[in-house]
Length: 256
Image 1 (cartoon, rainbow, N blue to C red):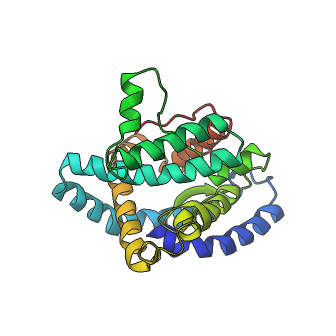
Image 2 (cartoon, helix red, strand yellow):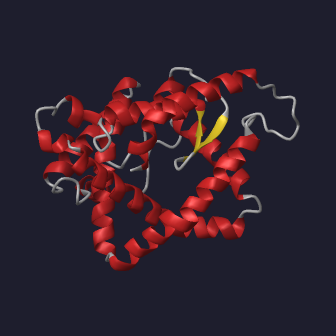
């Protein structure tokens, strides 16, 4: 749901932040080299925390309370399979044919034998054999990074959380052109299938994906709250390190 609501605003936000980032010097000792917009980012971060604490987290906890673990797993598998469409497309754009082959195979196997992705057959095959069909992680922000586009200033997006100028643009591109939920191949290659392109279908699916994703993060977020002296700083550093690792393909295989 959040991707649907805000993807159109991201382009404007990215452009304004890009101009701000270009005009900002790094002489302020209070700001790290990757975070020249820290004051604004902390304000957005605090806003997001308020939304999570008062809206998303109660809904996510309610979802976990009423949903049996096997159903949660099935729902997670379904959305993971949809994400593999994004992964496959970006792998092709990066000329990363190994990742494209694996991710495309995952979509094919899980959509057919896995009942539209409800069962992650591909990962089961990997666990039971030497065939590596584990999930990859590729997005358009990584695609830009692979072609030498620098991340630009670190930014915190409303509702969406940690990002950078490059990755925020990547989110917009993925949402408009690649993501089957918000737009994606269903709007390009299945334009004649009316029911797949109705907001009445996309909006509930996007909402369910947002709730499911937040529900999976609840335990980690609680641990982070207890362990981190400065949650903002911890999340910023972890995000930047992870993105660097993903772009360098040192963390291409994801575990669920």
